[in-house]
Length: 137
Image: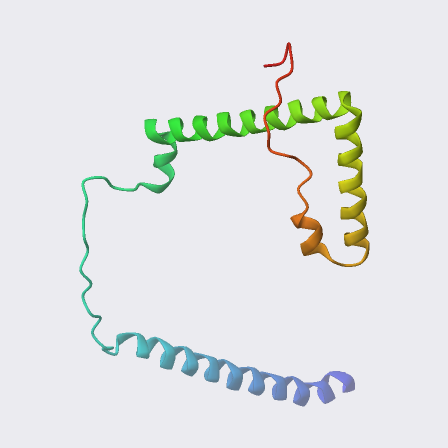
């Protein structure tokens, strides 16, 4: 019983502190919400130009033009990869081209090891010529 009597003043202190903190919080919220009703500066009107075609964002993905554009992009990428693959096949069958390729790779690796990444990126491994290979074209 004596312990509960001595603990009562501590509980009363915490209760007073809690009420004080709650009052401050209520006052802060009231001040913040009151500023929501204050008239602010007028926004300038912007001129909106309209066109006959509207961009719908997500729905543009399903349009016929978007589908054709995606297919053309995909086809161009496939053709580029096939061209590079034909060049690789031609290089593997020609010892002279393979030596040139290996020399370029050695130079590029040496540049990267020296920290010259920009110079290494400038070395073009692929010639860009479309190779004609019987059975693949």
